Amino acid sequence: MRPILLQGHERSLTQIKYNREGDLLFSVSKDHVINAWFSHNGERLGTYDGHGGAVWTVDVNSSSTLLISGSADNTAKLWDVSNGKCLKSWEFKTAVRRVQFSEGDKMVLLVTEPRMGFPATVQIFDVQNGATEAVSSEPLYIFHPEGPKITVAAWGPLNKYIVAGRENGSVALIDPQTGDIISTNMIHEATLTDLQMSTDRTYFITSSKDKSAKIIETESLEVLKTYTTDTPLNSAAIMPKVQEFVVIGGGQEAMDVTRTSSRQGKFECRFWHKILEEEVGRVRGHFGPINTIAIHPDGRSFASGGEDGYVRVHHFDDDFFTFKFQI
Amino acid sequence: MSSNWADEVDGDELPQIITDANGITTHIEYRFDDDGKKIKITRRTQKKLIHDIVNKAAAARKKWPKFGKEKGRPPGPDPATTNVGDNIKLKLSSTGQIAEDVDEKHDAMKQQLQNKKILCRICKGDHFTTKCPYKDSLGVEDAAAVSSPTPAEEAVPEAEQQGGSKYIAPHMRAGATGAKGGERDMFREKRDEQPTLRVTNLSEDVTEPDISELFNRFGHISRVFLARDRETNICKGFAFVSFTMREDAQRALEAVDGRGYDNLILRVEWAKSSV
Image (cartoon, rainbow over all chains, first blue to last red; front, side):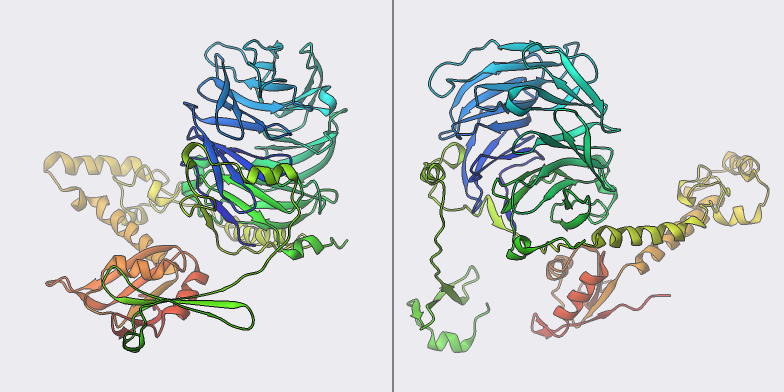
């Protein structure tokens, strides 16, 4: 396969995301820009300009009308996907590390980081009429979860929970109405770097700096599968269709990269069999660690964003679809 | 594509478009490049109509006008932001061989190093010689002569003594020469380990950047050495190119050996070790 290289960023990528149909790919990076791309040919649809700091996170709603982004300039912004207009800007005391639309797109989840005496918060905003009317500046709910810093978060099935991954490697279920921590489980030995839900949100995959990725059941927070590698991981994604695979990626810490060759850095996307926990293949190409991975909803292509500032979109060859795992 | 006298004689200024029976269209165009040379561009294209079923909403999105930094740009990928990378093979295997392959190499290296203890040649401590804290005060040769377990303490006053009586340039000091010599040897060793090609029959006008440009398409180059005349600073006609990867060097050797460059035919071979 010949990857499409997207050069819309000047600094390292922080998150990439496909919309529900997978025709659009959104990428955010530390260079303040949000890019929208057509995933089939890599054409840039446009940019969403307005952030004054590194953009940490992005999400798009299921009808691809609204886009939300969280940035280190202490704001989260709501955008019109079709024309790049900023519809709403919320200001916070600290940087916004994670945003996500709820199932049904009525709410958004925002996680702000603790800094300079301000505690970490999890906030939920109502964006039901975001496309047509003004959106409230006040959150529906605001929580101050105790304990180590939350690095990643996502909505659980039917918005019953918020699943939050913490700096110490634990995962917690939070009640989205009271902010109570329902349960918590120590999953990893080091900080969580990514958490992506399966299509039906009954299980999710986490990646961690402890060099492993794990599949965890949402309801019980039980570890179902473990994929152990030899390098710190920054992202993990579940292939929704075609093959029972997960794709994980990472690489040596950015600060240590100059000391090793790109081969040793292990900057590869690794394909693991989801059920049998066996590595099946690797895709190399990035010059630096892979920061974020997203898989097309139809499973026919995937994209990876790296510390090197590139997004690489890979459309699988025919033999990928016919591959059968031999036991 | 370089110009050919035959093209110039026959060259038609008008572009030619030929469509053959298989539906392959050949465009032949002539134009002048930046140096005023006439170049012929041949493009062969085959059009294939592919039907694809897309979601209605996705199809509507394809017609959206561009916005932000892309505002007003025509449809189609812009080469400034979108490029196609090198072909990458995703080899899927059921045996878990990918992991083993890498691990084996790693393990072999580990095994090799397992029995080797890092031993400083100067103070016999368990660090690399270059990192020795007594490197400046003690030379490699000195260390060989002194076999006591704490040679540093003995040698330091000696160095101070020398320094106290008369100024001695750093490179003339007792330890310094040895250490420097040792370092240079280490560099040489490292250099010899790298796959190096000897390129001969270069023309006089060649410069280092030319060589790098010629070879860096095959892989990462760690060093280019171009032999120059001491007085005139003109290329002596040969150069050494070190690659980081042996496979890259091999490919470069196969590809460039026998190729014409600046009206001479290059000869590329593996450089013989200087030892």
